[in-house]
Image 1 (cartoon, rainbow, N blue to C red):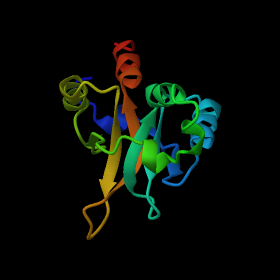
Image 2: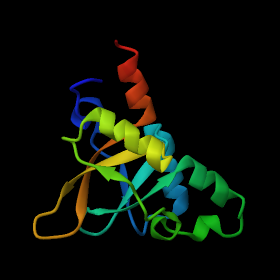
Image 3: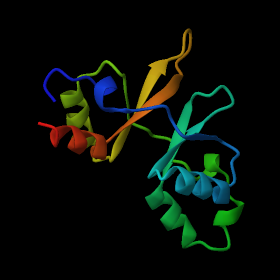
Image 4: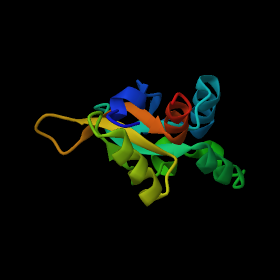
Amino acid sequence: MIDKSVADLMHDGVVSCPLDTPMPEVARQMTQADISAIVVVDHEGCLAGVISRTDLAVLYGYDEMWPHLQAGQAMTGKVHTVSATTPATEAARQIHQYKVSRLIVTEPVVNSEKERPIGVLSITDIVRTMATY
């Protein structure tokens, strides 16, 4: 991974859903795209949070409640982000430091403190790259 950036390893593009997406639809989107997490965006398409398969499994335990929740109510709002130009080795260190499975790759929105998601870098992406050495 020497001299590689996050852009070299990440999944380009993001599967996302709006804040008001019902949880059954979130589960359908994740299943159809065969992904382990979905990015939640606000009405401007900016990063609001993330929902993982683990989050969905936990919610399923509350069978009377989860079908009525929306993505904005169930998401994890504290999301770890990285830019596409970050060295891949630094991103791997952040994944370890924060004890997360993925980093959302973002670009800043002009004149705003918001970020727009442009990709995802997961542990799987890093291991896949390591296997090519």
